[in-house]
View 1 (cartoon, rainbow, N blue to C red):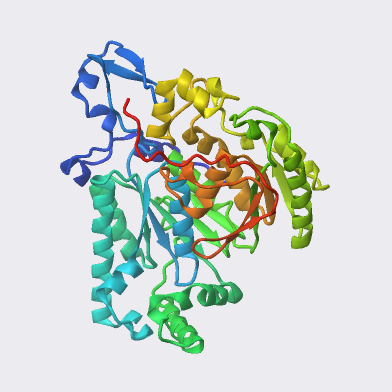
View 2: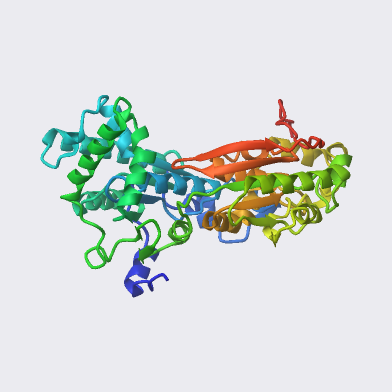
Length: 492
């Protein structure tokens, strides 16, 4: 349960304008809404026109649509990890970066260890991290400042909204330096501390992740583990965990023993709230996620999109083959999810096991184009057809949805997938693309063109810093519903 906010003082701090920042000096203030002089001075309602691509109403002046960048944060946010080595900080940083980018918040990770490797080409031993190693301290301090300079560049110049500063940050002095840096630049700071005392979890993290580090490329396992344990001891002597009293004015989440317990303090805005919710749902239990589309439908055969038709004969054959495949996998406590559309439910019925229906998993709504062939759309709605080819991710069907809408609709599904263990999701082409893009860290540009063929199953196995993918074709013929990216985009 989240603790109550800290009364009026924190409210004043959140609502008051941020200090004059370096961002403003280099060309980006903390509020782009007020950068337009006409917007400030002209208080009368302006003319509106509908953006033809996204079908949203926007201000219009002299026949031109005002271009405004959509921002999900009221000022840039700097996420700072805290914790001893081998506590999962980089795992958290990478997952959080992937999630925020997927929901449309431009986010980038800055791993200070990587800066250190670029600066110090040859790593010798844990002696480099000793607190009394002046030369090592100087290099590490230099690398941290280089990373913070790149954070400033990303958030102030490159249009980023969230930066993840991935380092140990184990001393109160170092964290104070980061807070001061953030205040000078008009950034909000949110700390994420990972505390783990379970020796088995620490040992597993060292073996699974750290031994693959460039630092230990020429070491055997025993030497590498011994050296890394020495590195941990170097940090333990100076480690100052976030404290409920001393750090009561900071915004943070403390994650204890990989999610056994959480402590959350001073969540001050929407983006921090989403970060907390996400981090409280992820886990590291080994599991597999199976994704597949429904069996081939009658409308698939006719080349028509959307609709709610039943399975074709080959689609029913796929359902039987899927049942055999799942039985052969011998999956422990498998859960099955479907959409609320006929073709996914029929496919799940063939499994002979309980399943759960999610409306959120329904196929993308093609609006006025439902049950049409692409050739018919091009003939009847040539402008719409061209606009979709121009930006397939953001294009919204008239009276329908875009892939961007679909990602927002699927966020609760992703949250629940992160909480679950072994699961089979029977869904649709556009839905499967969105889910796959999350797990494989694909961009908005790549997402709408991911190949998700009928009658194939994708087995996703989350790994330390990514996801292993296995594709299994169940040897049942089906039509090809994939439409390649146009080689030459249409002029509109």
